[in-house]
Amino acid sequence: MKRSRPDQQLRVPVGSFSGVTHADPSRGSGTTGHWALGAIAVGSFMAALDSSIAHTLLPEMGRALGASVAHIEWVLTIYLLVLSGTLPAFGRLGDMRGHKDVYVVGFAGFVISSALCGLAPSATWLIIFRLLQALTASMLYANAPAIITASFPKNQRGRALGLQIACTYVGYSAGPPLGGLLAMQFGWRAVFFVNVPVGIVGVLLAHRLIFRDRPEGKIPKFDFLGAALLCFGLFALLLALNQGYRWGWSALPTLALLAGAVVMLACFIRVESRHEHPMLDLSLFRHPVFSGSVFSSIMSYVANSSIFFLLPFYLLGARRLDPAQTGLVIMALPIVIMAMVALTGLLSDRIGSRLPTMLGLGLVVIGMLLLARATAPVPLWHISAALVVCGVGFAFFIAPNNSRLMGSAPANRQGIASGIMACSRSLGMVLGVAISGAIYTTIVHRTGPAGTTSAVATALKVVAAIAALAILTSCMERETPART
Image (cartoon, rainbow, N blue to C red; front, side, top):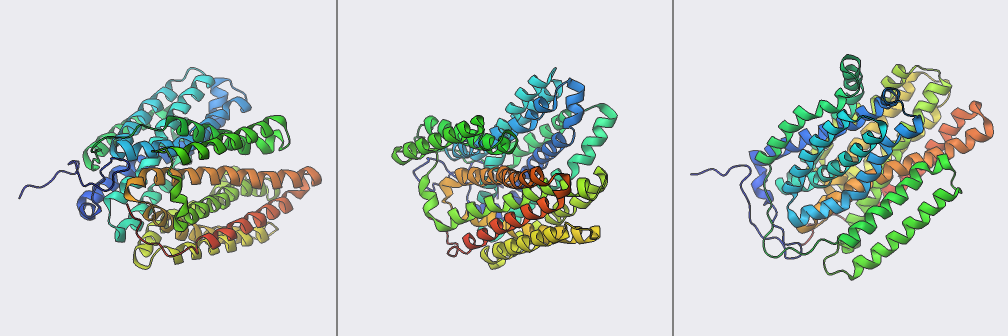
């Protein structure tokens, strides 16, 4: 019997709306699905590695390029804003043109833009090339979960998504030490050049091993107006939240951006509700499991980013630890997530996603309250133990919730669902820094540096209360297969 190649084109109609044919999940239950997951894992690891390395070496880049702190910070800011604003659009493009094609093009573009970043002659050019890198990374992030969902049957989806998340956290964890080593030996430019050989291998693997979901029939025109309104609306909102606690929440630039975001997003909803083939199918949010999963995802990343934002202020400022010690303490959180997330994904395949997500969020709330109590002269193991509780909670939540979200979307909406899922992560991270940063700076402004401990504790308690709200949205009706 002739065997089919992993990249063999599949043509199994699943719906007439998008005109796209998706891989039959039953075909992904064997080795081909695992090969596709392997190709996706390379991209997830590389994108996460690049992101964490850039954070670590930002001061070194600024010194080498003669840029001020305010200028070089845009290397990170522009990446986050562009990535977040374009995720839904590239997810929708994957639904229309095929997730594999968009993913492979994005992967190749990421390799090229990484090389350009390494060649940047100035900070301004580095920011421009990081913008290009964010666009191509968005094509990866927006389509990877859709490819995994299409490559595995429902009873293996949670484990597969968990493994992808684990590879992402491996990249985040390996970034700081690897970036420091490369910078010491070869200079900061090497952290971008290292993406080139790894990325070429990743592109070849993705091209060869991922099933192609080619469109059949007439493909509707892409909704450029809707995509532009959503992209610029999210960009304005995230920029205001990202910079508001620095500029001042009542400052004119902050208020202008927030007002512009409200207007553009309101126009977006109006346009999409009348468009025959909208960029974002708003009916997805009528499904309580989908909308609840999105909200819970945002709130979980509010908690996650708040912990990473607040703890350094306490450990470096109040406890007088050095940066290396601070990093070792905080590393407990991503290491626990990385170690457990695939197992919790497997658990959700067997018992469903509802109970693990609720349990996970409950543990996150408990862990944050323990951290709030730990902001006092207590042993460092107390803080590490609280971070372990948070890590276990996030591990129980992330993969099951992602599986729940993707499973609640129809097959011909997997790309846009994937884009929304990735966008919820970025939005939650920016909101977390904005909320915790506003609370922290307000208290420290009144009390001075002596109030660092109480400021961190108060912010953690507030964010814990916000995370507790997400438990309610994880109690939405039991997940049922979405119709196509």
